[in-house]
Amino acid sequence: MIINPEKALRYLGGNTVILKKLYESFLYSYKDFTVRIITMDEEERRISYHSLKGIAPNLGVDSLEENLPTDDLNDFIDYFSRLYNEIEEYVKEMSL
Image (tube, rainbow, N blue to C red; front, side, top):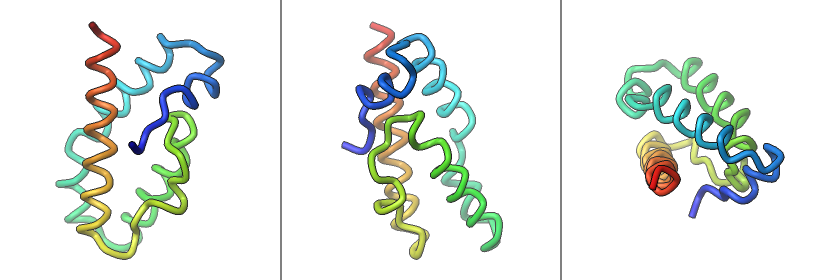
């Protein structure tokens, strides 16, 4: 599992409402990211990777710095898709 919601909740002071809004905002902002990143140049990708690393603690993502594959675009897209899907599933569970 890529996300650690318990870690995110600790980082957010246990506020589940904020966590849900943060996850929903991430899903909205990054909904077509895997399509967009294909057309980005190297500098745009570097900035995108850096942005993801910056929001990782809020999302409860463990060791993004070590686990985010930035050398191979296909590996990155696979990793990001798994991250996105995990967050999407967690939001669905929160809504039940």
